[in-house]
Image (cartoon, rainbow, N blue to C red; front, side, top):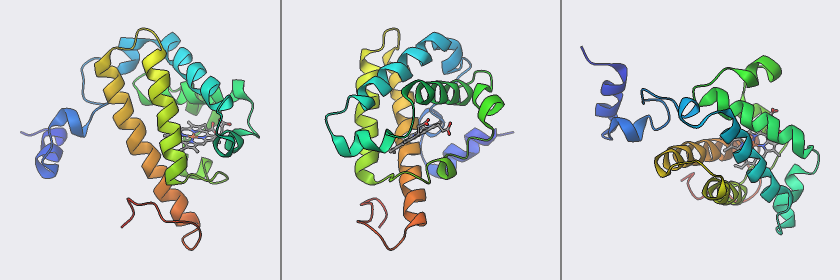
Length: 165
Ligand code: HEM
């Protein structure tokens, strides 16, 4: 009997490890890396974001306190990557499209977010290259899922994401 993952990878024509990059290992990223690494990663990421020389990007975060943004992010990552449901216990359902509704999540903003996250991953200690690849795949997927959500919000405004066609 095929597992759901085997069926899904047959349908999509990609290997299981590509299709379920962060979900299919015996050891979760949380078990492998530990809570402190997620705290370090989110601190590193948001330090870059709040110091960004690109004012248009930095200003998207102007109404959030850096410490709160860090905690929201590492609790979400912890939960999404196999750890305890810290985010949902404190904040409720992630509902990421809804939570990003107030912000301009454009294609350009997604690329800037991913740029800072790649830099943060590369400079946070104790993250092996396999984990980095898995996380970046997940972040890229989620970032453009949010861009698509943003375009549904304002279908007639702005320049459409080039991935939308
Ligand atoms: C694509 C570009 C993105 C932009 C411009 C953006 C922007 C923001 C902003 C301004 C906040 C508010 C900060 C706070 O108070 O926590 C936020 C929160 C958050 N973002 Fe994003 N984000 C992006 C991508 C992502 C991605 C890729 C993920 C997940 C992989 C993500 C997950 C979250 C989470 C979990 C929160 C906290 C929500 C809450 O607790 O209410 N974001 N984001």
